[in-house]
Length: 187
Image (cartoon, rainbow, N blue to C red; front, side):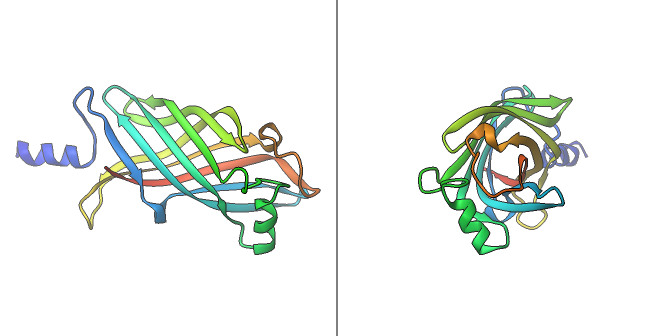
């Protein structure tokens, strides 16, 4: 009975010995960075980017790190002409800045649950502090492949002008909501 309980606790990542760091690497088909910004004050422009993320967690010590690399060249808004414009020097200038990064060594916990991360976001060579709110953080054993994995949604709002994206079409909002959806397997 005790062995079954210990296996269940371990499978759901409810407890770890102190100092037990776990490294999780994102699963590309289930990990994306999304953005949305206002358009003419009447609708939204939304898009997504391919993202590679590595998360190191020590849940017992309530610390860890996040290292996310977003492929700016992969922008997908569902409209190829707009995607080409977003890749141009008017917006992300992906020839000079092919990646966007988020790095954090300051994770925030509420009890045993990861709820936030303070770190540095770098867009077009401009680095600024950003706080991510983490929702739906949960670790499980994948039901099919039996590998340990964690998932979460993280979000923040930035001002694109603070990252040097001041050019662009008339009517595009300065506030940009960024969301990262992640599923990551234990490495």
